[in-house]
Image 1: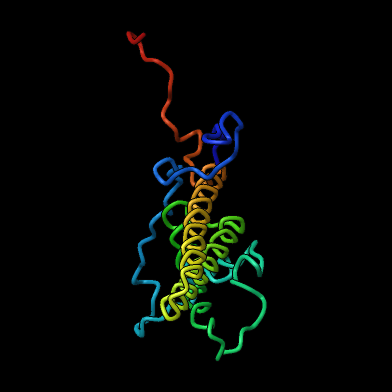
Image 2: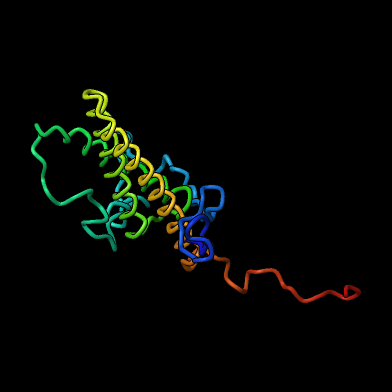
Length: 191
């Protein structure tokens, strides 16, 4: 988020806005883990006691149902919007995992996840309205669909920014202990 000075009619009055894509903080990529073949059985399944054993539980730790799901209400399978909601749910899961992997240092907290869920709803609604507008030729539906698509983009930028800022603020658990860090004392003859 950035404090920007207004322009046009709002000239001189500051406002908060999401950073443009080229100004977003980089965040932290997740650490790559090499899959050890010794942790798998001959059938390819994970062997007992492998280092991935607790990943399923860790994935849900400190999460909320609203952060994990797109919504709480069930939608009838034959509803016109049902396929769009399923697509939005897939988009949310994929985008949250991408944020965690590329920006969040392996994590995407409930705040960015919630923003991505909103963006997924906006994108699905936009696609739904675009399809209805294409079938009916209703220009107002086209305009509404376009606004929802733009709102989704802004939400995704905000989620990226928040995820990156959380990653940079999170204490590093894999830092080198102080006793292993190089000595900063100058040697003889150096200024």
